[in-house]
Amino acid sequence: MALLEQQPSQNKGPSLAVQLAMLLVMSALAAGAAWLAGSYLESRTVGEDTDTAMAESGAHDEATDEENKPREPAGVYAIEPITTNLAEPSEVWVRAEMALVFEGEPDAAIAEAVHQDLFAYLRTVKLRQVETASGFQHLRSDLTERASIRSEGAVKQILFRALLFE
Image (cartoon, rainbow, N blue to C red; front, side, top):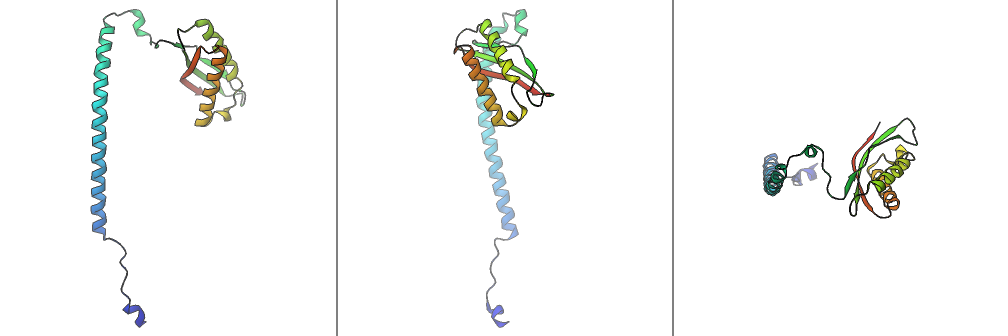
């Protein structure tokens, strides 16, 4: 028993007051860093927004009925939505709204052929193939490859506007 009393007690760490002070300092540093990052990003987007607004103001002077329709950038062709059931389970339906990115000017005949090919491919897809993010990436790459082959290289990319499973 005498040996235990002679050993000095071990320090268990900083006191509670020191820990709270460090927590407050670290929180203040994190809040300051977030504020600086937000200010920086806001200043960058404000400059881009004014450039875009000035460019659009010139375009709004020539108002037409087509202005209300969504415009596609050059080389992008929106195809009709594809609605079909999956291969497995067959009671699950998919609706895919996509756009094709062409190398040059979009061709409606090629786009229609690609649309039919993508429709046929989506009928063979199983739900478990696209349940994960990597499954979606594989689906996108498969559809892009099929579109490129069907169009003989004219379609460079497929853009998904919506993909809904029901």
